[in-house]
Length: 115
Length: 114
Image (tube, rainbow over all chains, first blue to last red; front, top):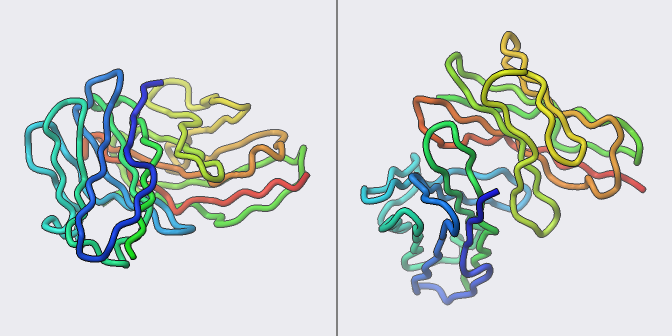
């Protein structure tokens, strides 16, 4: 299958700082990228959907000013957690897919710890 | 909005036992259905998917799933599990109206005892 690379895999940051997470589709053009958050022992919760060149669509309850998503090209999307707080500590996962009906491929996830 | 339900949160079984994980979704239109697996410490991997055609889908590692449209179900099965099947399993759905946005079930944590 296609490869989606997410970087970094782990990051520790101080409260109040911002952290950027990158998601790259390495061998295909991703029409759409999705960002999920996974709490311990829970399922993945969709945070937002981003299409290349347009603003991201955020799910209800997700603060768009806190979780900035940029999808500047068909192979790269970034999630920036701004002014991070300890409660933002979580596992963030991106996925990328092409046209409707195509499979979504997942990145390896980023474990964010805010201290 | 569509939703996905996985009935079992935890399943414990012995090696060589058969496994069946339930998944139901709520949406009356065209859907694509997926089962993903997350091994401890690893990222999500696709086990199998159903888009159209034969409702009995075979995936990797001996897993299969059956789409029963009348029951809105997509149950996952494996006739004989191994210790290495210990993982968390997620059912997911995409609907045409929402593009490729995956809606996940709550997950089922499977522990296979050697």
